[in-house]
Picture 1: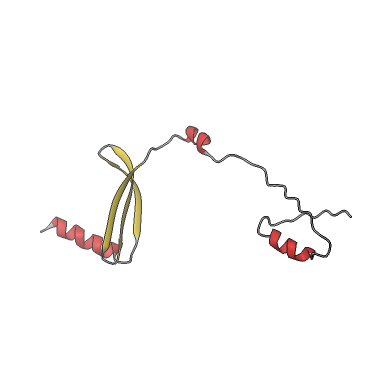
Picture 2 (picture 1 turned 30 degrees about the vertical axis):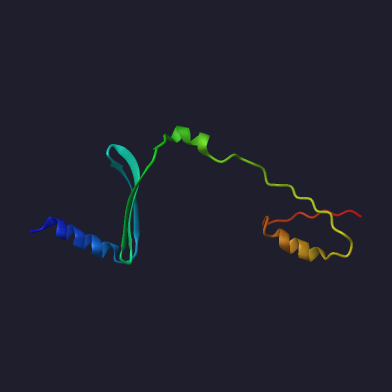
Length: 101
């Protein structure tokens, strides 16, 4: 009975559908993000060293809280408002319009 051959056969069947597996493991006592995958005839086995953080330390690494931007446009007479509003939809789902003449 050849144990290595059996493991290789199972691995080949498992990866035959071009998939990637990511898992956390220790390599040489160092925590790593391990990536195992196969695409066609190319096999990839990679261990990326990582630093595991405590939940209490996560607050220091979150993106800063910022307010929504306030955009002001000055339009020339004769420019259709609908065109401008359609372009503003990509900035925010709601548009507040205030006008003065």
